[in-house]
Length: 81
Image 1 (cartoon, rainbow, N blue to C red):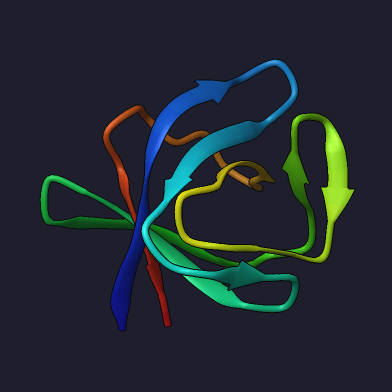
Image 2: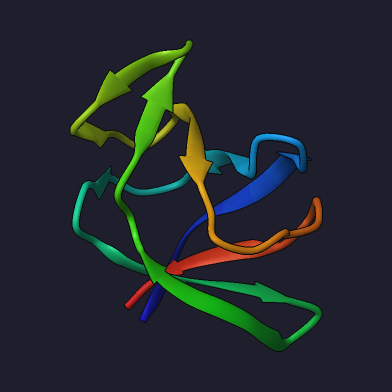
């Protein structure tokens, strides 16, 4: 498991986390959200958007929108499992 990014914002009405990536991410990857050392939840990436465009993958340095099944707070870290 390694850190791939950090949540900079969460849009609760649409259930989308904005994540600044430190490593590549692709559809089908399994990720875990962690905040303050506490595991929040795990899920499989099924939607990635960059500037409102759907993409299959994103690279280090991209800022992406990820559809999540649960709410997540700003500052949560994202790990690839």
